[in-house]
Every structure is written in structure tokens, then in C-alpha cells.
Length: 141
Image (tube, rainbow, N blue to C red):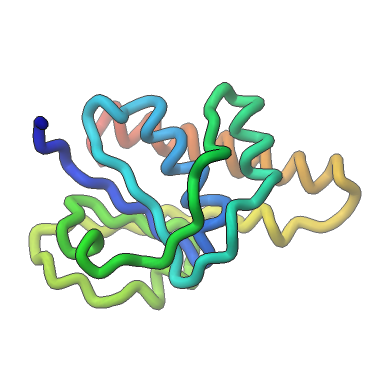
């Protein structure tokens, strides 16, 4: 098997933003990258995230919500945090060659209002993450 660079997406609960990023990078760049995601805690896969990704043609319904794995973290080529809390509380990475970035996105799980308004927040975050993944694939940064 070809050794592809590992991208590790991190968020607080590994329920929404990191799952969306994981899904898009696997769908759009899975031939070029190994992709994993995790959280400081495991909050479970958010059903609204699954729904908005399905609307975008990406099935993340089989994803699991996982806690950060030290071995995966230390072999990652890219560690990308998607929320400020995960960025501030990311465990120490012993791999000195890792590229660590913070791509901050609002937490759609904290959206309030009607179901329609909440889903609008999820779709906006989904679309912003997709744009950022496309930029990463085009520019490598």
C-alpha cells in the first residue's frame, strides 16, 4: 500500500466540524491523503451533520466519534484543529515534522432557533469547510 500523508482533523467532540472535514477530504482527496478525525471527547456523531453531508453527496453515517489517539496524532503529517477549544487544548505532538493548522469554524451544534434556522447554520458551516478543503487540495495549505 502506498504511504499517503495522514491528515488528522481535531475538534472538541468529534461530532460535527471534524466529521464534515473528514468526510469531504476523504471524498475529494482520499486518493491522495489518509484521513482521520477525533475529538478531545467523543460526543457521538451529530445526526444533522450526517444529514447536511448527505445533501452534499457525502455519506458519513458510518463514521464514529473518537477520542484523540496519541499514536495517530504523532504519526500525522497534518494536524488541523477546527475549533478554538481543540486548538488550545490539543495534546503535545512529539512529531516535530507535523504541520499544525487551526481552521476555525462556528459550532453549528450551538445554533439556536427553528429547525430550519439550525439546519441553515449546519449548511453554512458545511459549505465553508468544503471550500477550505478544496483550497487545501489545490494549494497544499
